[in-house]
Image (cartoon, one colour):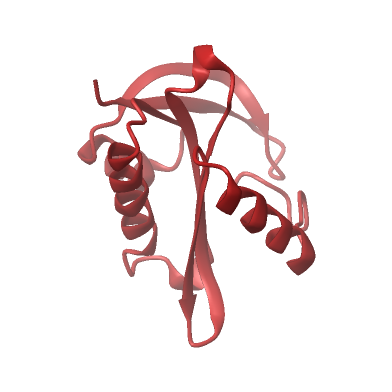
Amino acid sequence: MDRARGEAYIDEEGFIQIINEDSESPRNLFLVCEVEDRIAGFSRCEGKSLKRVAHKVEFGVCVLQEFWGYGIGKNLLKESIGWADDNDIKKITLNVLETNEKAINLYKNNGFEVEGVLKKDKLLSDGRYYDTVVMGRINL
């Protein structure tokens, strides 16, 4: 993750609100991976209702570090892509930190291409600046 511990924290009530809102929107999808009654990861596709951008959604994913390596992120991504394709969504976009090579390769292997790089976009807790890689998958 590219956030400091506790940054952008969403409590249970906040997650419930997001899930409820996403359930009512045909352009949003919220998926949760649960392991033994614990949330191990989640993903979200968020779209907008403006006509000029209604064809696309932005994808984001989070998997707890202790659950890395089990394919949770990969499965959340594949389910999101399937949902997008089934719902006539033409483009999925995402942002990923330049150092997250595993994620970048996963996205490339699932049809995403690098569309650009935001130079020195993130200042992380180690005091260094990092680039953000902007990626997209187009299904016309």
